[in-house]
Length: 272
Image (tube, rainbow, N blue to C red; front, side, top):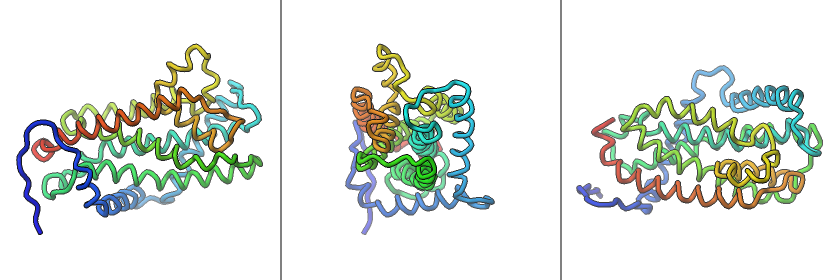
């Protein structure tokens, strides 16, 4: 069995069936990324707990103790960690998928497979850190005696929505990164800025009502609100227009990014 690669013109097809044919490669590359990430580290995957733990300590001092951010009946560390988990899942998946093509030049130039598998595998690999840190949230909720809400059944959908946003923006940046190496400096700036303009260290209900819709144009606002609502229920109500915006923007970014990636991937091997 062999594959014939022909030159094409016009708008590329997404060829989703081809991604399905190579689905095993997604898991292989994801597992490789996890192994490489923690290779020769002293504490290994525990970095997935150590990083959010330090961030929560800083947030608890700055926002909880000095700024007195209102959290209702929820302890501040629990509220902020729930938001941080959603943000960390997005930021890890976005950063890794954005650099996935450039960081694998040998694969791009020597082996044929759908190039979109690389950002896909990077997004899948980010789930490892997320689930390790999620265990930390479970311990914290037990410590503060915060019960789970019945709406926890919706948490997988918000995880999926978060990954959609990360993948949609990640494949845009992965294709741009190949052509413009300035993206290397832009990615950490976006991640750092996004942490502060997203409701990670505070509830989005603090935003004045007249600005709430505009603020929700950041698609991670709806995702973080959804994470908290699924975990805590009515104690942290969800802003429905913000969630709607997140869904619409995630789908638009994914479809637009997929077509842009497919239309530029034929140039990857020559440029990289």
